[in-house]
Length: 156
Ligand SMILES: Nc1nc2c([nH]c(=O)n2[C@H]2C[C@H](O)[C@@H](COP(=O)(O)OP(=O)(O)OP(=O)(O)O)O2)c(=O)[nH]1
Image (cartoon, rainbow, N blue to C red; front, top):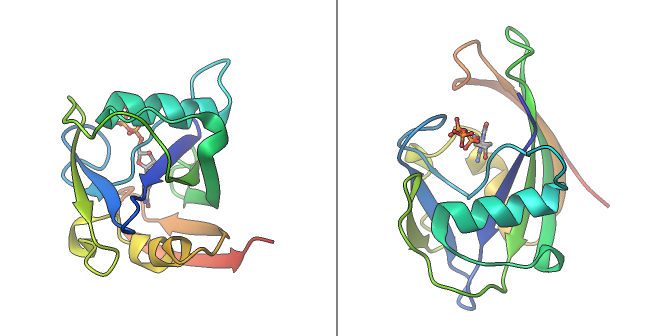
């Protein structure tokens, strides 16, 4: 699969905007806003485009804060494996809006809906929200959903 971006908007009160996926991969899960990189785009351009398409927020590439470089690995299905480059953003214009793909909602960082998120997100999302920069690999079972293991390290 092509590599993907993932953006988590954080407001002045520290709340995080998540979107509930209305279709496709990760259907029904709460996630940051992102998707596959398109030809000719940088990852930051991909992140800005997907953020706008999925929840209407307009951000500038230079306002994205790199927070994690993840690799979603599936040994049973190497074609599925892809990177997830994760950014936080605190500056944008526009207001969150429902799209075809995502239904956005603000969450307190102490009350993230981990039981309805990708399984390993509880391991790394709290770290990046506390300001850590991480690099990691998440190993998925053949179903592309069950997590069989993970390794993280801090990025300097
Ligand atoms: N938070 C989180 N996101 C993940 C994990 N695994 C994983 O693929 N993702 C993300 C990366 C992408 O942003 C998103 C899937 O890509 P997508 O939104 O383009 O998928 P889609 O099938 O709907 O594709 P499309 O129609 O929009 O092209 O899921 C994970 O473990 N945690």
